[in-house]
Amino acid sequence: MKALLRHLVSSTVAGIAAASLVLAAVHSQQAVQSPPPLGPMPYVAIDHPEFVAPSEADFLLDDDILLGVATASAAKAYPAADLFQHGSVDDQMPDGPIEVTWCSTCNTGVVFRAQIDGRTLHFDYDSMVGANEVHRDRETGSRWQQSTGEAISGPFKGRRLELYPFVRTTWKEWRRRYPGTLVLKPLPGYAARMAGVSRRIKQMKAGGGPAPQGAFGGDDRLPPREIVAGLAVGGETMAFPFSALRTALVVNERLGGVPILVVHQPSSDTTTAFEARVNGRHLRFRSMDPDANALTDVQTHSTWNAYGLCLSGSFKGTQLKPLIPVAEFWFAWSEFHAATRVFTVAGRRASKQDHVR
Image 1 (cartoon, rainbow, N blue to C red):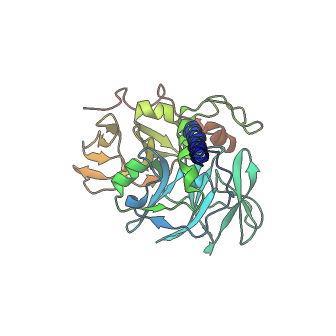
Image 2 (image 1 turned 30 degrees about the horizontal axis):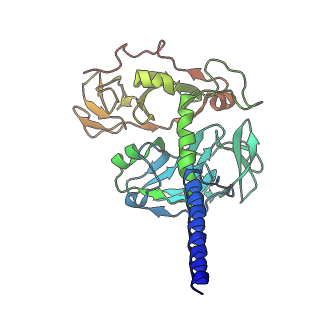
């Protein structure tokens, strides 16, 4: 009997040891294996967006790209990595309904007023034209080119949605300007994909690679995937390559017969633009630091910030009239703005000095 008991105990201990080795091997294998890839989520517009405070936006890193909109009473941030997964968000600001859009193929983020003739429109993804998304409004079935906001078919064909003031910037820069901002909350299942999508968007900064087949008109003044800030003023358009803006910082130009100022902050790749005149007086600007956080005008030496507000000097408290640059790949901008001019550092009219000290 004792021999039998010893045999049973020995067998049990051996079995436990073997099982432990198997479990250890499984855990070891799991530790070195990558997690399984995340499956696709439905590519659908966000109809009823929810927002969180900055303290709850743990899904964002400082250098993550977003589209920001603000009025005197409200500021909202729409992470590009979330927009990338939906195409558009139908939302409401204090001054009316807006559509916040992002085309992942051509790296185009644009915000529009979601009204025509006082009628509010709601949008869904429809198709691709010229490697750019087309959205269909539910109210009339009209189809709208995302890059331009123009209806290409339907009852509103030929009409354009009005641009809504927005800025493409980073989470760190937007939070600095608007610490009380609201942040678009990812829908269930989408948040887990944001980190990977955000890395992909930031990698587009390099601007390498060809355009999608059949989507590029062949304008070789710039590489197809060079990111440009496109401006339209008075029937004339101009593209400002990010690569040139990172060197120039401040650009004094004329577009559509209007003197304009373009400011680029390299640390966040934030581009802003304004009419460069106050009370009919044409002003020219220079950067006061390497990141164009502060500017000075040549005429009065007043100090301005990168968002067109005069901080000190003769024009203290004056806000320059903002223009709305649209950032996207060159192949998309040139596709829909064939007659566009292109800014080059060598050809700029500003001083050869990038900033004054």
